[in-house]
Image (tube, rainbow, N blue to C red; front, side, top):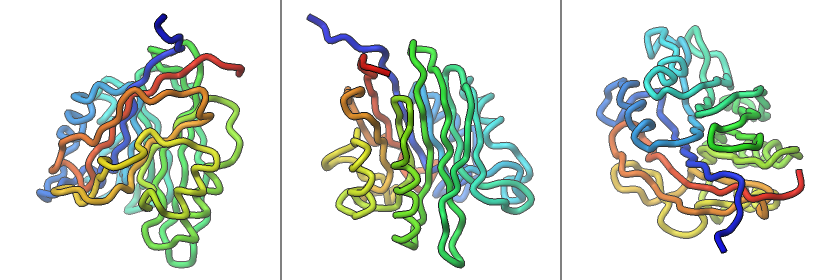
Length: 242
């Protein structure tokens, strides 16, 4: 018998470096093409600018909506150059609501946050929670604060995706694994440096573990459009008590 599942979702996470590639070109259409070609149902984006000076006042989320045909939501982690800088989510489906959870920052460090949405993807008959985040790259204390926020209770089947700035054997990832399971467990998921990836710091996580099954996961072959490679996984949402 074929296994019973509620839906199958293609999940993409990508630190887009505000749209600037390693070739020094600011090219949001290129970012949009990479996303579109991956055919995702849900996308978590990090290092997203909205109306900042360095992207000439453009709204990255609105442009990516137009380029991909998906719906988007932005969560600012901090004001920056006359606009906002933070995380974003794109979905083929209905966005039911969103909230930004600040992450405590050590003095002198960038404010970080988790953008959480409740949504119903088109290919799913159930609501899920989807979270996009970018942990601090300098302070383990700040990364641990982010893990504490991410581990708070969530009342829906959930996916957390983003740039966690920690390798798989790090204490931060171990702390997250108390509540989450990883779709990218094991070797083969290095995302940086982009030219020849050697380290994994980008992840797709899910909870509760018994509600999800990993169908596939891969690092996409995109070495130019950002300083991170995109990470793509297909997850199945399984039946269970809500």
